[in-house]
Length: 437
Image (cartoon, rainbow, N blue to C red):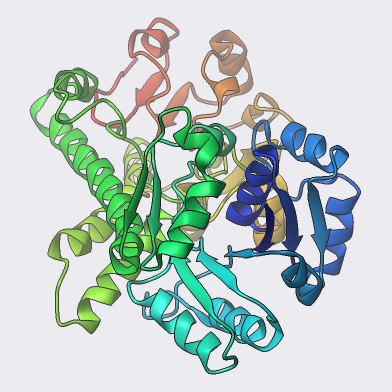
């Protein structure tokens, strides 16, 4: 099947490459000429493990194409996926301007029946809005479908090729048949495709992400309570996760959630609720707790240094919001850097993957190290902000030699408590006892 993907951001590029891998001819459209030219030459514009190999393979097989010409791609395709940004506005609501603008263009350009697929995360009722916009521009028949993505950054290729389910909101039998044909390689292997109405499909994505945000935040509150009463959150987590009604995933405490999805989707669902005179009280509480959780260790750092961190050099390991991505959107590292700088500390950071994105944002407000150990030179304390694999088994002896103080504040609970204790480090993590040497 010939398919157009409008937007080559994270979702669009992974979706387009996956659909090409399934044997379709995929035309990826983007207005950024430089980006499109780079992709034509095999340059993957985002960091995602295992994506480049699949990307290059499908370009070589002439199943994956890139263009800035929407009309050209539209004329070749029966199905058009909208994978466009829906950033939060000042009031938290999702900005649909990119989606509506492209819908306008499609309405003006289409010459035969199309299935328009909303792949972007959009508020309930967006399919109706897209339908109304296109209908105002043309009398040619078309259908609008909701098909939300459920990709985890860092595991997007795995998730896209082996999804737990495919959710499709479609009222039209013709559109359902076409979507079933696209995803037949999945259903042939037992992966379910769940058909529903468009509004239920749109809400499914928001509900899933918001629930996971709540789960993470609940565990962070339990971790904070563990510290008050002397319990160990790692043991509590294992005990809870062994209940198959709860499961082990998303029970790891830390310095809050971030990224491109959870913060944005929680805000958007809260705002959508208010528009219907409904208050998502649990989501409002989740948002408030997460805001505090992201910087919960800064007060601990101040406490360790007697109330002031003026002039202290803090080494930071990790800048991405999570491991295996270069995404720094809503990253806890940024909140901590801002607060540490405000309190007069100096920050030297190391993250080989996300560093460039932070440099674009912060410039020379902080220093950037070429290695994890270089960041520790003369550091008064280490702050672990991202759970990159290279940080999991460091050389503590070398760390001690490089640092002014053997002090670690671990926002991701990277180390068993006995390891820093055996190496003579002061070690403060989340929801566990503090090691004082």
